[in-house]
Amino acid sequence: MEARRQIADFLAALLNVYTLIIFAWIIVSWIFSFGIRVPYSRPVNAVLDFLRDVTNPFLRIFRRLGLQFGPVDLSPIVAILVLRIGGGLIVGAIDPG
Image (tube, rainbow, N blue to C red; front, top):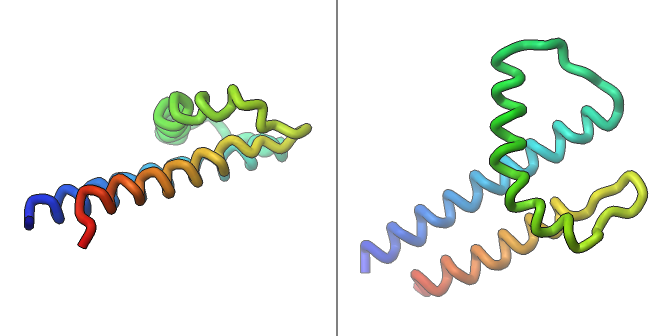
């Protein structure tokens, strides 16, 4: 029983971290859409590349659904909802107590 609890806790923490990474990507993309450009810096570029590389494969699934209305892209919001609801169901199935 304890192993199931640890697996469920680890998966819940992983889902929380991935959700935060998606939020970070949303904030960065908003900053860029307002025309603010960060001066070239290797560490900043490394962080931006990491955020893009980690979030794009998952978000690409939802971008195919055509959730972009003008300049507003709702695919990250739908992706977060699916991640939270689906992840919650999986975590609950692993450790219902």
